[in-house]
Image (cartoon, one colour):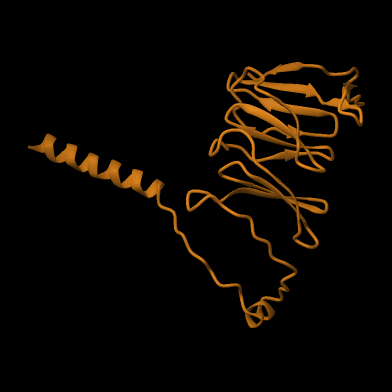
Length: 194
């Protein structure tokens, strides 16, 4: 009898823990009144709307970069807003829907997004796909990027550093970014983490 009661109790705990993970609250809050904003010493500069694919969708991450706000939804849509006006600069979809696991990374030329295990480099000016690769590894953390390099961490305990490609205005490949950070052009460096 004890085993039966213990089994039922464990099942009940596991069921409640599982349902708590799936709990999401949906609401349509009102925009704060001017009185509320005044009390908080806030001023609404603008507001923008980005269409979602139903209740399953929502913002995954929103990041600020100079004069742009870069937002990624759970369904994989990326929307770039002008940070001063709220105007949509560009919007794009790519990859498989609902395969977004990591935040975006960006530099002055590209926005980097991971969809499933594929890495996409989007042109920062218009959102077109500049290049895409699977890299043959399981990515374990969001990508990091600077002006010259892309850093990826693999589930194998390694960090990979790639020199970013350069393209001519017509889209033709013209070499790799040169960096003072490394003594030579870095095509691929692997760092083992103990």
